[in-house]
Length: 113
Length: 219
Image 1 (cartoon, rainbow over the protein chains, first blue to last red):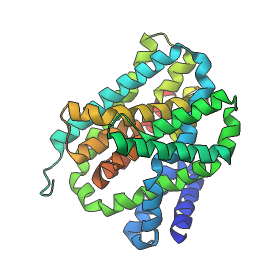
Image 2 (cartoon, one colour):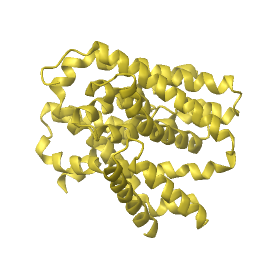
Image 3 (tube, chains in turn brown, orange):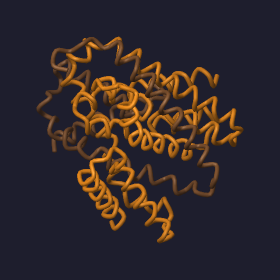
Image 4 (tube, helix red, strand yellow):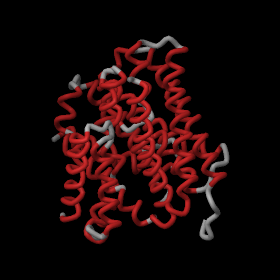
Protein backbone atom coordinates (compact mmCIF):
# COMPACT_ATOMS: atom_id res chain seq x y z
CA UNK A 1 0.00 0.00 0.00
CA UNK A 2 2.90 2.36 0.77
CA UNK A 3 4.26 1.56 -2.68
CA UNK A 4 1.02 2.37 -4.49
CA UNK A 5 0.66 5.57 -2.46
CA UNK A 6 4.17 6.66 -3.44
CA UNK A 7 3.52 5.91 -7.11
CA UNK A 8 0.29 7.93 -7.01
CA UNK A 9 2.11 10.71 -5.21
CA UNK A 10 4.77 10.91 -7.93
CA UNK A 11 2.05 10.80 -10.61
CA UNK A 12 0.34 13.78 -8.95
CA UNK A 13 3.68 15.56 -8.57
CA UNK A 14 4.39 15.06 -12.29
CA UNK A 15 0.91 16.29 -13.17
CA UNK A 16 1.33 19.41 -11.05
CA UNK A 17 4.78 20.15 -12.45
CA UNK A 18 3.57 19.70 -16.06
CA UNK A 19 0.80 22.22 -15.42
CA UNK A 20 3.04 24.64 -13.58
CA UNK A 21 5.73 24.62 -16.28
CA UNK A 22 3.12 24.48 -19.10
CA UNK A 23 5.14 21.83 -20.94
CA UNK A 24 3.27 19.59 -23.39
CA UNK A 25 4.65 16.43 -21.75
CA UNK A 26 2.21 14.17 -19.88
CA UNK A 27 2.29 14.36 -16.06
CA UNK A 28 2.93 10.63 -15.54
CA UNK A 29 6.02 10.75 -17.81
CA UNK A 30 7.40 13.63 -15.71
CA UNK A 31 6.47 11.62 -12.60
CA UNK A 32 8.50 8.70 -13.98
CA UNK A 33 11.53 10.97 -14.41
CA UNK A 34 11.10 12.42 -10.90
CA UNK A 35 10.86 8.94 -9.35
CA UNK A 36 13.93 7.79 -11.27
CA UNK A 37 15.77 10.84 -9.95
CA UNK A 38 14.53 10.20 -6.39
CA UNK A 39 15.72 6.57 -6.58
CA UNK A 40 19.08 7.69 -7.91
CA UNK A 41 19.53 10.27 -5.16
CA UNK A 42 18.49 7.73 -2.52
CA UNK A 43 15.50 9.82 -1.37
CA UNK A 44 13.25 6.85 -2.15
CA UNK A 45 14.34 3.25 -1.58
CA UNK A 46 13.66 0.69 -4.30
CA UNK A 47 12.31 -1.80 -1.73
CA UNK A 48 9.52 0.60 -0.69
CA UNK A 49 7.72 0.42 -4.01
CA UNK A 50 9.23 -2.47 -5.93
CA UNK A 51 6.37 -4.85 -5.10
CA UNK A 52 3.61 -2.38 -5.98
CA UNK A 53 5.36 -1.39 -9.20
CA UNK A 54 5.82 -4.97 -10.40
CA UNK A 55 2.18 -5.82 -9.62
CA UNK A 56 0.87 -2.77 -11.44
CA UNK A 57 3.09 -3.32 -14.47
CA UNK A 58 1.95 -6.94 -14.59
CA UNK A 59 -1.54 -5.76 -15.60
CA UNK A 60 -0.40 -2.76 -17.69
CA UNK A 61 -2.16 -4.13 -20.79
CA UNK A 62 -5.51 -4.19 -18.92
CA UNK A 63 -5.27 -0.54 -17.88
CA UNK A 64 -5.35 0.63 -21.52
CA UNK A 65 -8.58 -1.17 -22.43
CA UNK A 66 -10.99 1.66 -21.42
CA UNK A 67 -9.04 4.01 -23.73
CA UNK A 68 -8.77 1.64 -26.70
CA UNK A 69 -12.53 0.98 -26.60
CA UNK A 70 -12.97 4.69 -27.44
CA UNK A 71 -12.79 3.93 -31.17
CA UNK A 72 -16.49 2.96 -30.97
CA UNK A 73 -17.29 6.70 -30.85
CA UNK A 74 -15.84 7.14 -34.35
CA UNK A 75 -17.42 4.20 -36.15
CA UNK A 76 -19.42 6.69 -38.24
CA UNK A 77 -16.19 7.56 -40.08
CA UNK A 78 -16.78 4.25 -41.88
CA UNK A 79 -14.53 3.56 -44.85
CA UNK A 80 -12.04 6.30 -43.83
CA UNK A 81 -10.92 3.90 -41.08
CA UNK A 82 -9.26 1.71 -43.70
CA UNK A 83 -6.97 4.56 -44.71
CA UNK A 84 -6.37 5.68 -41.10
CA UNK A 85 -5.25 2.18 -40.17
CA UNK A 86 -3.09 1.96 -43.29
CA UNK A 87 -1.32 5.24 -42.43
CA UNK A 88 -0.72 4.16 -38.82
CA UNK A 89 0.52 0.72 -39.89
CA UNK A 90 2.97 2.24 -42.38
CA UNK A 91 4.28 4.68 -39.75
CA UNK A 92 4.63 1.89 -37.18
CA UNK A 93 6.49 -0.55 -39.43
CA UNK A 94 8.84 2.05 -40.93
CA UNK A 95 9.53 3.74 -37.56
CA UNK A 96 10.09 0.50 -35.66
CA UNK A 97 12.19 -0.84 -38.53
CA UNK A 98 14.48 2.22 -38.47
CA UNK A 99 14.82 2.12 -34.66
CA UNK A 100 15.35 -1.62 -34.53
CA UNK A 101 18.00 -1.74 -37.25
CA UNK A 102 19.93 1.31 -36.00
CA UNK A 103 19.87 0.09 -32.39
CA UNK A 104 20.82 -3.46 -33.38
CA UNK A 105 23.87 -2.12 -35.23
CA UNK A 106 24.97 0.46 -32.65
CA UNK A 107 24.48 -1.46 -29.41
CA UNK A 108 27.68 -2.64 -27.78
CA UNK A 109 27.87 -6.38 -27.29
CA UNK A 110 26.94 -7.61 -23.83
CA UNK A 111 28.55 -10.67 -22.28
CA UNK A 112 25.29 -12.17 -21.09
CA UNK A 113 23.36 -11.49 -24.30
CA UNK B 1 -19.67 -2.29 -11.91
CA UNK B 2 -20.81 -4.70 -14.60
CA UNK B 3 -18.63 -3.00 -17.24
CA UNK B 4 -15.58 -3.06 -14.98
CA UNK B 5 -16.15 -6.76 -14.37
CA UNK B 6 -16.64 -7.42 -18.09
CA UNK B 7 -13.42 -5.55 -18.97
CA UNK B 8 -11.37 -7.58 -16.47
CA UNK B 9 -13.02 -10.87 -17.50
CA UNK B 10 -12.41 -10.14 -21.19
CA UNK B 11 -8.74 -9.38 -20.44
CA UNK B 12 -8.33 -12.60 -18.44
CA UNK B 13 -9.91 -14.46 -21.35
CA UNK B 14 -7.34 -12.77 -23.61
CA UNK B 15 -4.49 -13.89 -21.31
CA UNK B 16 -5.84 -17.42 -21.38
CA UNK B 17 -6.13 -17.42 -25.18
CA UNK B 18 -2.56 -16.12 -25.37
CA UNK B 19 -1.11 -18.97 -23.28
CA UNK B 20 -3.36 -21.47 -25.07
CA UNK B 21 -2.30 -20.62 -28.64
CA UNK B 22 1.02 -18.82 -28.12
CA UNK B 23 0.57 -16.65 -31.20
CA UNK B 24 1.95 -13.08 -31.18
CA UNK B 25 -1.24 -12.01 -32.96
CA UNK B 26 -3.29 -12.90 -29.88
CA UNK B 27 -2.92 -9.87 -27.63
CA UNK B 28 -4.97 -9.66 -24.40
CA UNK B 29 -5.53 -5.89 -24.79
CA UNK B 30 -6.80 -6.40 -28.35
CA UNK B 31 -9.10 -9.26 -27.37
CA UNK B 32 -10.53 -7.35 -24.40
CA UNK B 33 -11.03 -4.25 -26.59
CA UNK B 34 -12.97 -6.19 -29.21
CA UNK B 35 -15.16 -8.01 -26.66
CA UNK B 36 -15.99 -4.82 -24.74
CA UNK B 37 -16.62 -2.82 -27.95
CA UNK B 38 -18.97 -5.50 -29.24
CA UNK B 39 -20.85 -5.59 -25.92
CA UNK B 40 -21.17 -1.77 -25.92
CA UNK B 41 -22.52 -1.74 -29.47
CA UNK B 42 -24.96 -4.61 -28.92
CA UNK B 43 -26.32 -3.09 -25.69
CA UNK B 44 -26.26 0.44 -27.20
CA UNK B 45 -24.36 1.72 -24.17
CA UNK B 46 -22.77 5.14 -24.78
CA UNK B 47 -18.98 5.25 -24.38
CA UNK B 48 -19.02 7.91 -21.58
CA UNK B 49 -21.23 5.62 -19.49
CA UNK B 50 -18.69 2.84 -19.96
CA UNK B 51 -15.67 5.00 -19.07
CA UNK B 52 -17.41 6.20 -15.90
CA UNK B 53 -17.71 2.60 -14.71
CA UNK B 54 -14.25 1.56 -15.88
CA UNK B 55 -12.66 4.57 -14.14
CA UNK B 56 -10.74 2.54 -11.49
CA UNK B 57 -8.64 1.09 -14.33
CA UNK B 58 -7.94 4.48 -15.91
CA UNK B 59 -6.99 5.89 -12.49
CA UNK B 60 -4.33 3.20 -12.09
CA UNK B 61 -2.78 4.07 -15.45
CA UNK B 62 -0.87 7.15 -14.20
CA UNK B 63 0.83 5.35 -11.26
CA UNK B 64 1.56 2.43 -13.63
CA UNK B 65 3.43 4.73 -16.02
CA UNK B 66 5.36 6.16 -13.04
CA UNK B 67 6.11 2.56 -11.96
CA UNK B 68 8.14 2.10 -15.16
CA UNK B 69 10.87 4.00 -13.28
CA UNK B 70 11.48 0.86 -11.17
CA UNK B 71 12.66 -1.49 -13.97
CA UNK B 72 14.52 1.48 -15.52
CA UNK B 73 16.37 2.02 -12.24
CA UNK B 74 17.12 -1.70 -11.85
CA UNK B 75 18.73 -1.73 -15.33
CA UNK B 76 20.54 1.60 -14.93
CA UNK B 77 24.05 0.19 -15.50
CA UNK B 78 22.99 -1.37 -18.79
CA UNK B 79 21.28 1.85 -19.89
CA UNK B 80 24.28 4.07 -19.20
CA UNK B 81 26.49 1.68 -21.15
CA UNK B 82 24.15 1.64 -24.16
CA UNK B 83 22.95 5.25 -23.96
CA UNK B 84 24.01 6.63 -27.38
CA UNK B 85 22.59 3.72 -29.42
CA UNK B 86 19.32 3.89 -27.49
CA UNK B 87 18.89 7.64 -27.96
CA UNK B 88 19.87 7.78 -31.64
CA UNK B 89 17.82 4.70 -32.55
CA UNK B 90 14.73 5.87 -30.75
CA UNK B 91 14.75 9.42 -32.13
CA UNK B 92 15.34 8.25 -35.72
CA UNK B 93 12.42 5.80 -35.58
CA UNK B 94 9.99 8.22 -33.94
CA UNK B 95 10.91 10.88 -36.50
CA UNK B 96 10.25 8.40 -39.33
CA UNK B 97 6.87 7.42 -37.89
CA UNK B 98 5.74 11.01 -37.25
CA UNK B 99 6.96 12.03 -40.72
CA UNK B 100 4.92 9.31 -42.42
CA UNK B 101 1.87 9.95 -40.23
CA UNK B 102 2.01 13.61 -41.25
CA UNK B 103 2.86 13.19 -44.94
CA UNK B 104 0.75 10.16 -45.96
CA UNK B 105 -2.62 11.62 -44.83
CA UNK B 106 -1.90 14.68 -47.02
CA UNK B 107 -1.03 12.52 -50.03
CA UNK B 108 -4.22 10.52 -49.48
CA UNK B 109 -6.33 13.70 -49.08
CA UNK B 110 -7.81 12.57 -45.77
CA UNK B 111 -10.15 14.90 -43.87
CA UNK B 112 -8.45 17.82 -42.10
CA UNK B 113 -9.47 16.40 -38.71
CA UNK B 114 -7.88 13.04 -39.50
CA UNK B 115 -4.74 14.70 -40.93
CA UNK B 116 -4.24 16.62 -37.71
CA UNK B 117 -5.12 13.73 -35.40
CA UNK B 118 -2.79 11.26 -37.13
CA UNK B 119 0.32 13.43 -36.55
CA UNK B 120 0.45 12.45 -32.88
CA UNK B 121 -0.47 8.75 -33.35
CA UNK B 122 3.03 7.53 -32.34
CA UNK B 123 2.81 9.42 -29.01
CA UNK B 124 1.11 8.13 -25.86
CA UNK B 125 -2.54 9.18 -25.72
CA UNK B 126 -1.80 11.66 -22.92
CA UNK B 127 0.68 13.50 -25.14
CA UNK B 128 -1.74 13.31 -28.09
CA UNK B 129 -4.47 15.03 -26.05
CA UNK B 130 -2.20 17.81 -24.82
CA UNK B 131 -0.78 18.37 -28.32
CA UNK B 132 -4.25 18.48 -29.91
CA UNK B 133 -4.29 22.09 -28.75
CA UNK B 134 -1.31 22.79 -31.03
CA UNK B 135 -2.25 20.60 -34.02
CA UNK B 136 -5.90 21.69 -33.97
CA UNK B 137 -7.09 18.07 -33.94
CA UNK B 138 -10.23 16.96 -32.06
CA UNK B 139 -8.63 15.75 -28.76
CA UNK B 140 -10.73 12.58 -28.46
CA UNK B 141 -9.95 11.52 -32.05
CA UNK B 142 -6.23 12.20 -31.49
CA UNK B 143 -6.30 10.10 -28.30
CA UNK B 144 -8.27 7.31 -29.98
CA UNK B 145 -5.91 7.08 -32.94
CA UNK B 146 -2.90 7.15 -30.60
CA UNK B 147 -4.11 4.23 -28.49
CA UNK B 148 -5.20 2.25 -31.56
CA UNK B 149 -1.82 2.85 -33.17
CA UNK B 150 -0.20 1.48 -30.01
CA UNK B 151 -2.49 -1.52 -30.04
CA UNK B 152 -1.74 -2.32 -33.70
CA UNK B 153 1.96 -1.91 -32.93
CA UNK B 154 1.75 -4.34 -30.01
CA UNK B 155 0.24 -6.94 -32.32
CA UNK B 156 2.28 -6.54 -35.53
CA UNK B 157 5.68 -5.29 -34.35
CA UNK B 158 7.08 -8.36 -32.50
CA UNK B 159 6.69 -10.69 -35.52
CA UNK B 160 7.78 -7.88 -37.90
CA UNK B 161 10.98 -7.21 -35.92
CA UNK B 162 11.80 -10.93 -35.93
CA UNK B 163 11.13 -10.99 -39.69
CA UNK B 164 13.60 -8.16 -40.45
CA UNK B 165 16.20 -9.78 -38.20
CA UNK B 166 16.08 -7.53 -35.11
CA UNK B 167 16.68 -10.06 -32.31
CA UNK B 168 18.58 -8.21 -29.57
CA UNK B 169 16.30 -7.53 -26.59
CA UNK B 170 17.21 -3.83 -26.25
CA UNK B 171 16.73 -3.13 -29.96
CA UNK B 172 13.35 -4.89 -30.03
CA UNK B 173 12.07 -3.09 -26.95
CA UNK B 174 13.31 0.29 -28.09
CA UNK B 175 11.58 -0.12 -31.46
CA UNK B 176 8.26 -1.07 -29.84
CA UNK B 177 8.31 1.78 -27.34
CA UNK B 178 9.46 4.46 -29.79
CA UNK B 179 6.39 4.10 -32.03
CA UNK B 180 3.84 2.09 -30.00
CA UNK B 181 4.27 3.82 -26.57
CA UNK B 182 2.61 2.32 -23.47
CA UNK B 183 0.69 -0.49 -25.16
CA UNK B 184 3.83 -1.51 -27.03
CA UNK B 185 5.67 -1.38 -23.69
CA UNK B 186 3.07 -3.64 -22.05
CA UNK B 187 3.69 -6.11 -24.90
CA UNK B 188 7.48 -5.67 -24.78
CA UNK B 189 7.51 -6.57 -21.06
CA UNK B 190 6.16 -10.00 -21.99
CA UNK B 191 9.48 -10.69 -23.76
CA UNK B 192 11.53 -9.87 -20.65
CA UNK B 193 12.60 -7.07 -18.31
CA UNK B 194 15.33 -5.69 -20.62
CA UNK B 195 12.93 -5.55 -23.57
CA UNK B 196 10.41 -3.74 -21.37
CA UNK B 197 13.00 -1.29 -20.05
CA UNK B 198 14.22 -0.40 -23.55
CA UNK B 199 10.60 0.09 -24.57
CA UNK B 200 9.96 2.49 -21.64
CA UNK B 201 12.97 4.52 -22.77
CA UNK B 202 11.67 4.58 -26.33
CA UNK B 203 8.26 5.70 -25.09
CA UNK B 204 9.71 8.50 -22.95
CA UNK B 205 12.02 9.79 -25.68
CA UNK B 206 9.19 9.64 -28.24
CA UNK B 207 6.91 11.65 -25.92
CA UNK B 208 9.59 14.33 -25.54
CA UNK B 209 10.56 14.45 -29.24
CA UNK B 210 6.96 14.60 -30.52
CA UNK B 211 6.06 17.32 -28.01
CA UNK B 212 9.03 19.44 -29.04
CA UNK B 213 8.43 18.86 -32.77
CA UNK B 214 4.74 19.75 -32.68
CA UNK B 215 5.28 22.74 -30.41
CA UNK B 216 7.96 24.09 -32.78
CA UNK B 217 6.19 23.35 -36.06
CA UNK B 218 2.84 24.81 -35.00
CA UNK B 219 4.35 28.18 -34.26
